[in-house]
Image 1 (tube, rainbow, N blue to C red):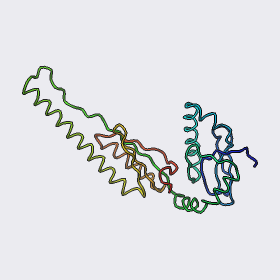
Image 2: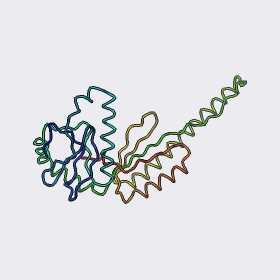
Image 3: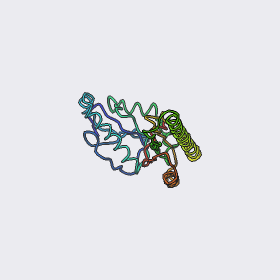
Image 4: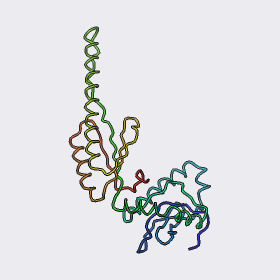
Length: 229
């Protein structure tokens, strides 16, 4: 298929044996460019200059890029490419596949039966005792001290719960990636075999029922964004 140049690329995959149903891209239909064994999922880059200059369009394109990857990944293993990955031409893309094809093929072999799962742990607000307005002097400072101790005890229990959950995840996951907390929210990414998904979901349900200090959410099976080497 003759495509305008350059190309915008979403992902790499093994060359499918059967036609692969592809969704619509950011601006038009997607297609495969291959070197006989590996293929890139691409569309003609007719839009980058326009969206790169407008934040709203850029953010919309980020969401479309991610949606397309997740949609294809539901039925076919792939290596996701970063948003904004572009090639100057079909020839340039095929040269890239020829240079790095062995590495990509090895990654696909390792990740073929695996998926990434994102866990988010949001700390629950700690309920603290009110300090009565009529308290004065020593009684006030004792009440304030008790309030601070209650907060410290709850924070310690909160951290202990998180540590226990992380220890369980490290035993369950093949690989684990933990981001730096943002506003107290912990984000953990796991690489698991798809056959382990039910066990992970059940574990999260158990935690949701038992933990006192965390709100926990689990993503669907995602392409292995954080585990490409």
